[in-house]
Image (cartoon, rainbow, N blue to C red):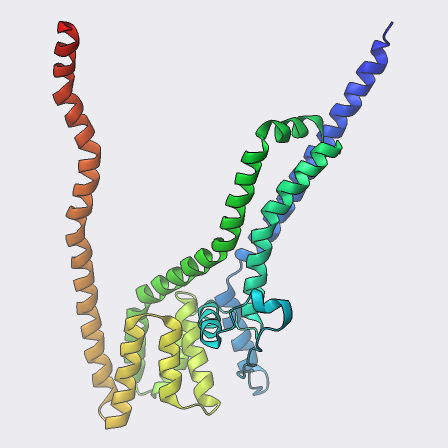
Length: 329
């Protein structure tokens, strides 16, 4: 006769092992989510502003403004990182807009993208191998075996595509978000610069004052203004520093602002009048953009309404015909 007590003990041990495995998996997932949330939740712009302010207040210690040139990829990295220096410079410039200014930032970016692209196939093949070796819990092994090899390969392919193109999409979305926040707060920052200049401050002092005052409302603009002032104090040409700031911001308003300041300083015109005129033009531009967005709404609403109303109209129109046709035949 079978010993039912042993069978019950074995089943209880198996259930306990499965429960421990699920608890450990859940704990690891929570730990990873916590680490990722802690890293992504940091306000990198505010941290850079605090570091810059601390460096400016330490016994006249000059902050580090020099940047080390990135080296060309060597060895197996040539197949991973673009060899074209202009392409690497463009990627580094885009990453620099988000505050990632390490010399090897392009290499780190492509390494992370390679890791994310390979992690899903690795997990899929590892789970298949472990399930066939009998090292996984019974429920999880049955799920993997019931999924099918073709479906697992599809999951691996989709995970590879998401891991490979995901960082690029993330970088693009972060840059667009930063540009939107800069575009929304730039007119207010320009008004503060205009008021500071009218109050008697010079352009450099006005930029510094506005950069400190606007740090909470718009840390992105504050960082750019403070970095501009630090570059000018370090001996860089003001025109080049202004246009580089405009390129980092990535909006047309900043480029026009840099052009207005440069032309005013070159031709000796009144900086206050130039800022006042450009502020008025920017307000008109904002009003025109708002009107443009309002004029686009009827077109967008008509498309949505047609997609929602046409099926109902077809149903109302064709239902009597279908009922009569079915009743006759």
